[in-house]
Length: 220
Image 1: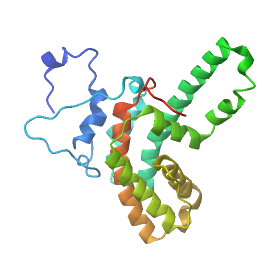
Image 2 (image 1 turned 180 degrees about the horizontal axis):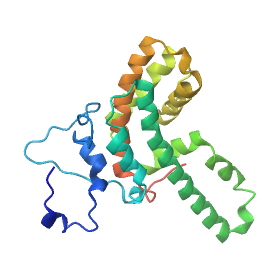
Image 3 (image 1 turned 90 degrees about the vertical axis):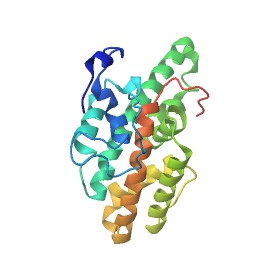
Image 4 (image 1 turned 45 degrees about the vertical axis):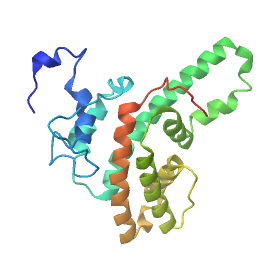
């Protein structure tokens, strides 16, 4: 890559690392052989890059993951674990956002604490924060959601696990399956997990580029 510093000076607060995710989405990486694991948009003579969500730019570990870990040729379980680190980062931001809004509401109406005790309880539940993340904070291609959801359901069904109505819940169930019951996975499950990983990274990149705590029409 060659940077034209005269042009990049025209971009307010330009930092190359803000474009690491978008570069990977287009097929490029700082290490290994580029993005070999997800759908690459074919470019003609020009590619249009998008910076990571403004709210995530101070989390330098996201850049580190895409610079050093995401491009690695890893075994399927290790790759899923690497990818799920991004979900962990995002749901921590969701918790912070939810808690700030909770405190603000409580401050304006101190008598509502008893009524809101369930809201506080939900905030500490990882599964609930994963559901909030996907439904309220990001914008993802419907096709990418469907592909990842299908992969999750196939893996869960193959291993006798219950499937749910949303991709977020099924992804969380896959996470629990791999953390608590990885020893039951057979060769077919490992092959399915490879397909799931490839679908997962496509969804993650969309999430990192569109994450926004101020998204309108939020429903809980």
